[in-house]
Length: 235
Image (tube, rainbow, N blue to C red):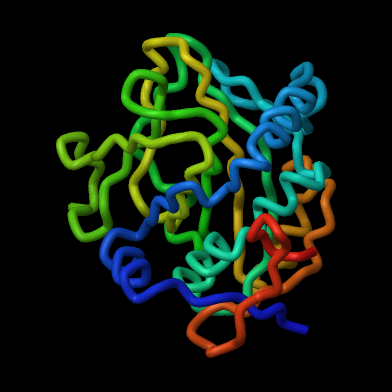
């Protein structure tokens, strides 16, 4: 059974089509943010907790069983943006925490899997900008094909913002020059038709959560999802 989701506003849909990403201001409600930070800190552990090695220069957190994390990952605005980008039924496949260490975290501009059909989202748990390792992106309509740093735009914002983007959009973190905290949750959403491939590598990806839900992507005209008193999807 497909779970109904909202559609983005006309302006949001146009931005997603033009740029391939959307920065949702304050989409993680204030009442949830401290709980998200607590989940992040509780999930940081020794490298041995990960089935596959993680990149140096980052703190990594296992968070996918935390109920507050689960609720925010299903925020209606996030699901609406993901559904628009994928335009087909999809599922929430993964979430983990990441934070660049001081003087570390820089990534070259890249795409997450050449030609891969997927959408990612970053839930920012701290204020972010060019001083503490914020993400930079090349809007889809400016993308020349090969990475070009002169076209990259460094995003800035506040704790509670959520960036949703097509994984084929050129992007990458910047170096954390100031050393200020820049914790995020990294979410992945995949088309339902690719579930078998994702399930085959659950252990390597350290996925412990239930991923059986299937959301209705695309302009299906379904009613909005039920939400709780925080404005989050009721699960």
